[in-house]
Amino acid sequence: MLPYAAYLRVYEPLSAFPDSERHNWDAYAASPDRPRRAGALRAEQVESVRRLLGVPPLPAPAQESGNAYLRRVDDVLYVCPWQSRLRSWLAFSRFRGSTPVKLMDRFVPKAIVEQTADDFDRFKRDGGSAALRTHILTSTWHVPTPWLVLFDGAERWLVLDGAPPRPGMPKADAGHEQAGSPSSPTAAPPTSPTRTLIYVTSMAQARRRVARSLNVIRRHVGEVPTTAEVEEVGRWLEEFHPHSLVELDYGGLVHLMDDDTLRTDQSVAELAAALTGLDTGQEELAFAMYQRVILRWKSIQVLESAN
Image (tube, rainbow, N blue to C red; front, side):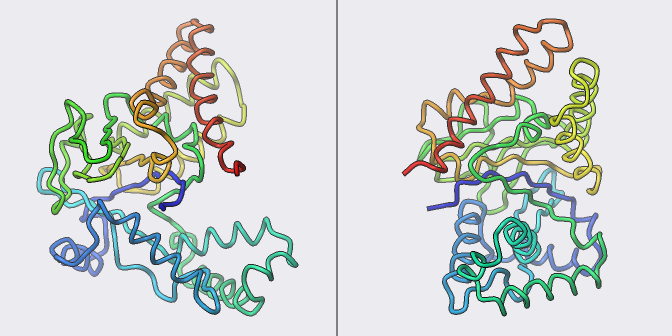
């Protein structure tokens, strides 16, 4: 079972990487043995479970992953590295910071905790703040509202179990992981045999939508927690190449929803309607649309504590 998590990913063009990495990713894309998109999440999960079930458990891999998510658009290769080691370090640091020491010892031996922390500190000293840039953000049990403002409803692609892509979704080659033009809402995901709900847009569009959302929220609501959260996502996007692609993947969350629920999930379009209503003085429409989004995701989040 995949983790109940959603993912926000940035795919940078191959030209954005240093020469040495560019050569490696180009060769990786041509390899017949690399994990394909349809099985990539499962491959990541298997790797993580093996580490955590080992004796002793390892919070982070010994070496950085050499895998990545790939897309091709008009013969341009876009790369989103897994960065499993960095993401594990960051997640472990958050977990350690929120867990009492006595309880922490029950999860991971103290010596392993200290070694993991030392390795991460050494990595940060050697690489500086730039080394902490991760191409993938993860959210468990829900899709954060600030992620939704980056996309348009027309950029939504839904595939149900064993079903062909929804009407209007261009076919993609599962081996080459191609997409449509990133300058339009036709950037499609690769074909997948399992249920998938994703959005894909260009970096330019995502940044424009962040700026517009912040403008509307500040003028009509002010500096509220949502403002800071949208700003944080905007700052993260600024760290990447301006010609990148941005992808929202519902990931394992699709297994918490039946087919009808996935078909009717229009969170991106509803949040866009809420912002438009707010900006045009239609307060009732804005409130109704915003509430639909919030209540939908609250109903998913409560499943975390269900038994």
